[in-house]
Length: 200
Image 1 (tube, helix red, strand yellow):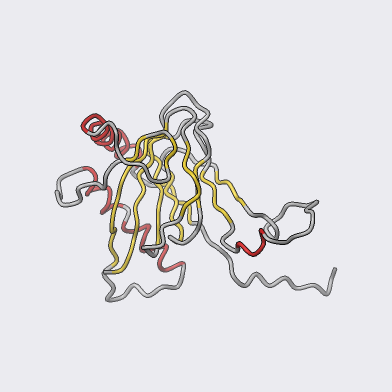
Image 2: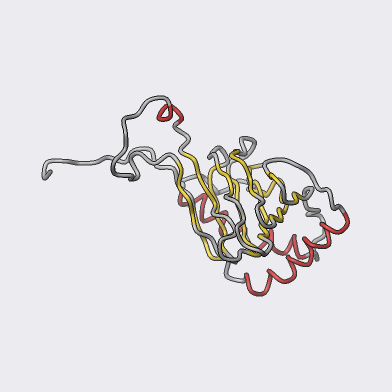
């Protein structure tokens, strides 16, 4: 209709970057994560169903690959703050915690959120084809209680959106946004580094 104006008032944004130095960082990050896995084979269980979830990384050693990586992603975090219109001047923006998840074939992560932070992120160290899409659930859960039958799926009615990912992708999103990881249907490991961001 010519007289229609659609006002998208409350968008839920997910920021997808390609980490510029992924080819340099990923082999070393992969070795670091596999070494953690060898020293703590049981890991911890959170949203992971199957797979291995590390304890939080040690971010105190400035010469370590994980700290160098944390420093490199700062510019993407800062850009996300700016895109969201958040104040960055005189604010101590920090990575609160960082960890890794290795999902093997048929492993997945159930729906969850990170309510104790402003932003969360997922970085793809290893992401073979069909290893499991990153999926975001519409946080407006009232829509789940009542809605008519949908004949044309679009941004006005979608309840779950999937994002295709590849090695070197960095996804940053609001910590409150419910998200999950689809089942790894490949025969290779899917390795992700996740972290939470807050203001100290």
